[in-house]
Image (tube, rainbow, N blue to C red; front, top):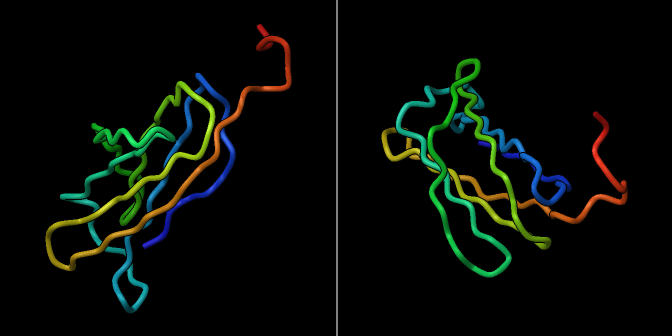
Amino acid sequence: MSGTNYRGVRNHAVRITITLTDTAGTAVSAADTRLRVMTPGGTETEITPLTAGTTGVVYADYVPTSEGLYRYRAWRASSPQIAVEGEFDVADSPFATDPT
């Protein structure tokens, strides 16, 4: 199982993508997968809904409201039980405004 680690921009969606594989590296169903995000201040939030991509891939869009290091944990409670943790850093954009 793998996740993504990257830099995000405050108040803009960050896509968290999780790939679920068994110990042999074979993609497994994303059914029963859950995702939690922890803010830089330590507040944990469960993210729903998760969107299924191809077999073994789920993702969710999360909008961080403050700068700092965010952590996430995704897990699958059914067999095979799988868990992954990752992180992403969030900062203000150096651009003055978003293009329109």
